[in-house]
Length: 164
Image (tube, rainbow, N blue to C red; front, side, top):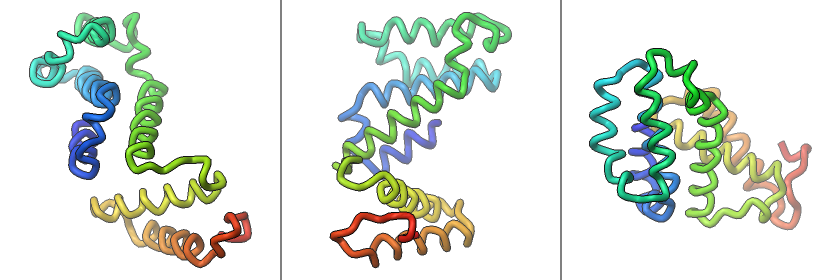
């Protein structure tokens, strides 16, 4: 999660300052992941460095209290706050980040039909994976096919299943 935060700061410099709630959720998820990995000392250090500033904001106090309570349990997965460790929480965070990026880039979902929008997202994801040297030739081939389909399609028509 720290790397996600750093990548967002690098690629979208104003995003996290425009969306402080997203920045907070990313920071708290980093803390939760340290707890999940039983890296308690690192979690304390992380909390002091990155979460302490949020403690003065009444908007975040309740959520910080819930998150910090995970430390009290030997097995946080069985604690009353175990929901913070579920994949659904992470999925919600991913959705928040995605919406913030789309808003920051002024990409509006309604401008494109859903399939074209999904294809455009796929191209961006493949480009990012290539930047990180994560993608293999399969990703590159898929990305190139989708990109050419998007750019070779007539502008007046929206993409349909035959466009792929």
